[in-house]
Length: 478
Image (cartoon, rainbow, N blue to C red; front, side):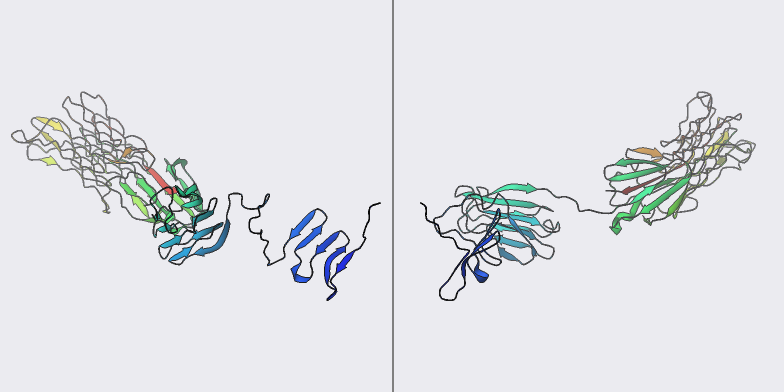
């Protein structure tokens, strides 16, 4: 027969404190604050709050210990130096100074992790120094590892004396969470981290939220006015609509040479957008009708100036770019009596929004008109080098400006070509300028819609209308 001892508690003789105590389903071994083992149902608790559970020298364990992770120390390291401890991870803050960490003496399986606290390793580097005589990633003994990549994080595991501390996990920089611009209006497309709102007619750029980073509220924009119509009766080319652009430093793209019209930092409000129409008629003897203005916020681009007409020299007009001079000269015809094109950049802004139109003439050896001014070049003259002072070929339209604000390189604000009785087709400037009427072309062409191109000069009632303008807004949205 098996012997049994049945007790609920075993107490010490000296002070009657519990050695083993059973209460319900809980059995406690040890007494007071030093209870080392508690058995409660299916749970076994070793140690006590604030105490340590240790293995005896030479003992082994299973089911416990590390699983390739570290205990992260959430107080960031800011001092110039510190020494790492096996099994710990550190957030390293180099905002104010560079920091050096000395690794613990290596033992197989030892592990240490680090993480750039607030993406400043690129400003002040972080250096990892092995313990005396040890290596990092198989490098030279005592060789430092210098980390200067923004947002870098690494985990080191000690392998052996040959390799030393091996980096086994590495994370790349990840941007922090942000609140960026949220807006509606126009046709919306994306290019990289930027949104692009394109207005080909009047509308509203309605901003419901701005960025939590003030610098990101500066937007890039392009404001192009309507181009003017060309003149009649061997009329000058229509001037291009004014061209104004500004590029924010946080919206990468290739801007035009005219970039720099003025900074716009948006707020959470509605911005009315005006897109100017192109000039459509000729009011001989008053020249081609002008283009209309385009606006966004504080920026206004002036409509193009109409091309000059005959039989009166009146009618050539100033504007964003000026109209080309018509082929008029009072009797008797004179080689010295040519008609100037009108001034561009009217009203004046910096950088200039356009250029002057070219010269026209009606002389014994030919009838031809000047080209309309463009965003980056004056309209072409009919004057040719000596000894032939005038040509029967009209002036080319002035060249426009090319920008990639829309996501692809596009030219805007080219001037219209000047009409001619010569047989050569007279082209408008790059950026939507219309072709002039000549015996070769048969008819004047319009400036291209939504480019602000000037219309081609004409005769016998066939003139080119100006192209409508455009407004484009680009900003960082992620």
